[in-house]
Image (cartoon, rainbow over all chains, first blue to last red; front, side):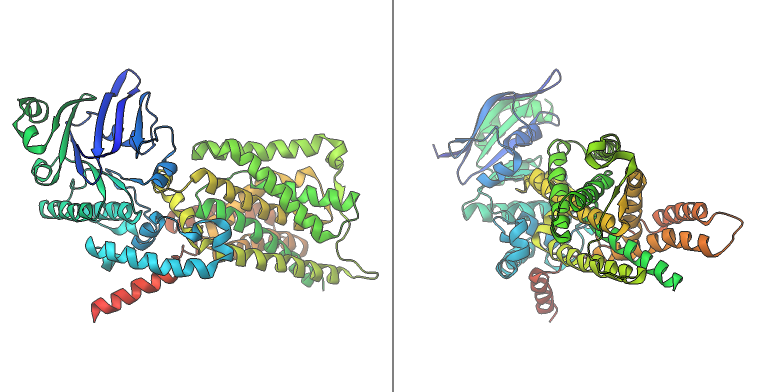
Amino acid sequence: MEESLLRIKEVAKHFGGLWAVNRISLDVARGSITALVGPNGSGKTTLFNIVCGLHKPDEGCVYFNGERIDHLSPHRVYAKGIVHAFQIPRLFSRLTVLDNMLVAARGHKGDSLLNSLVFKQGWQEQEWKLATKALELLNLLELDHLGLSPAGELSGGQRKLLEIGRALMAAPVLLLLDEPAAGVNPNLGRKIFEKIELFRRSGLSFFVIEHRLELLFDFADRVYVMDKGKIVVQGKPEEVAKDSTFYKVYLGD
Amino acid sequence: MGLLINFLDIIVFIGIFAIVALSLNLEYGFTGLGNFGKVAFFLVGAYTYAVLMERTEIPFYVALVMAMLTSAGIGLLVSLPALRLREDYLAIVTLAIGEILRLIVKTEDWLAHGVWGITVPSAIHWSGISVLETRLVNVGLVYFCLIVCFTFMELLTKSPYGRILRAIREDEVAAEALGKDRVKYKAQVLMLGSALAGLGGGLYAQYMRFIEPYMFMPMVTFTVWIIVIVGGSANNWGMLLGATLVKLFERGALVIKDYFHLPIDPINLQYILFGVFVIFLLAYRPQGLLKERQIKTKAVEVVQRWRNRCSE
């Protein structure tokens, strides 16, 4: 068994009377692409929000690198190395594509009030380096020609790509991707997963929600199937593909 | 001669309100904080300055700095509970704080003579100084402060720090998920904004030489909001333009009233005309007269070079 990077232990969360997440335990291995699938409303996004600190779990714990993180606020979870790309892109619409990327950068000296005023020389140099890095990522996502356009002018698919690019810019250890291939054309969806595979080889770990099963079976290392707040099936993609419960909850008999 | 003195009066008002508008622009224009209690911090600055000048022997610039610090302190105090609220509630809370502070100075006589008002000794004074000279001194003082504030705002809002403020304005949840502590940034912004409003208040007290609670009605807040909306939020130059237009109109009506006899009171007419103007502006140019500009750091050069290389 590979080393576990993210460990979710007996986590539960309810909204009113509904248990959106009902005592779930799972592991994301270091350097893996772990997938979470399940019908709409099965609690996948809620689980992601718990991991990245937007929701506090009612029960259970979340460990990252052996450290408990479920009581931390989102910016502290980011500091630990977990970055979340939202299902519906939450871009800074009136900021340029470049600025969207630069906001996400980690450890920018100019982010503090004093430094931004007094230490201009220092952060200008850093801006240069970060912008070069941002452009390399944008080039990979085929958005480099749009660097100075406002993010609000992008098309739906481009927004999705920028959301992922911004998360990559944050130099994460673990990246949570909520339906990265949804709403983009089939070719681009596969391309996104090929990029994910590329980053995985360089040491990143991914925890992905995705409905495009053929992509999951090609790229994921481990698949968890969720239904009504519980994990019903788990295993390697080829094992899950043979499981009858999986077909029942996901494809309906 | 009288006209020149009136003109200088308008110039001073433009300067003071440009400073206060810059502070609201930082809060609302760049960070998206709907502060409807701007007058509270203007009041704190004015009263701190007035009380210090009346009761102590400290030089006026120390009193001005104290006005800024007191205002910033109260800004921070207000921000602690208020920043955890949603945007519309922040507006209600700040609006209420403005009224509370005004009622405190009105009823607590020991503080600043309540409704009787407080007389402020002149900051710069020599024997035989004429009205014109006094006005000129004030123009110099106010515009020196304005230039400092303006430069400060330009540096701040065009830095990576300003970029984060804009990001928080656009989507605070996303900014937080990308590692930016929104409560910290918002508290800093409210502190800085309050300090600037306090400076404006101090300058106002120093220029008026007499302040009373009646001068700090919620209308002051709305005037500053009109300046920000007309000038163009998230554009510092827009604040100068907005303050010029609004104050020229407002103080100009007073001057017109002195010199001409019109069938309608120009002060009332001024309110009506301005209301109509703001409605039209919001309908046809909601971003204000001057648009927000992109942040230009070295990062932009990198992109431009990249583009040129690609197009070759």
